[in-house]
Length: 143
Image (cartoon, rainbow, N blue to C red):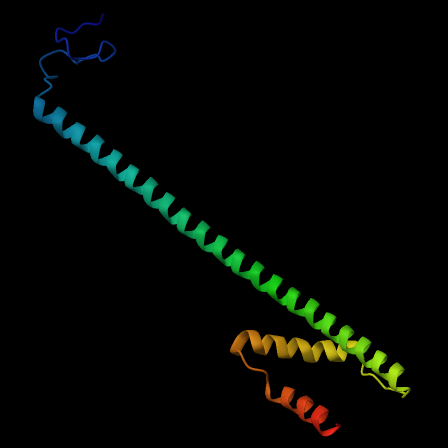
C-alpha cells in the first residue's frame, strides 16, 4: 500500500521523494507542535465560550425567576387586599343591619388600595405605615 518504506507512516500519506525533499524529524515535530497548539487554542476558545454561555444563561434564568416571583407576590398582595376590603364592607353592612343604622361605606377599591399599601409596608419593613395608625385612633375614639 503506498510507496513508503516505514511501517509507522499511514498508507494514505505520500512522503515526498527526491534530492530536495528531505523530511527531517525536527520539521515534523515543529509542524505537530503547531497543530497541537492550534487544537489547544481552539479547545480553550470553545470551552471559554461555553462557560460564558452558561453564565449568561444562568443569569437570565435567575433574573426571570426573580421577576416572576415579584410579580406573583404583588398579585397575591392585591388579591388579599381586595379580599380584606370586601370583608370589611361585609362586616360593616352586617353591623349596620344589626344596629339599624344607615352606613356610608367607602368604595372597596379605595379600601383595597389602602390595604395594599399596608401589606407592602409590612412585607418590606415589618411595620405598618404612619397613616395606618390614624385609622386605629379613629376607631378607638368612636367607642
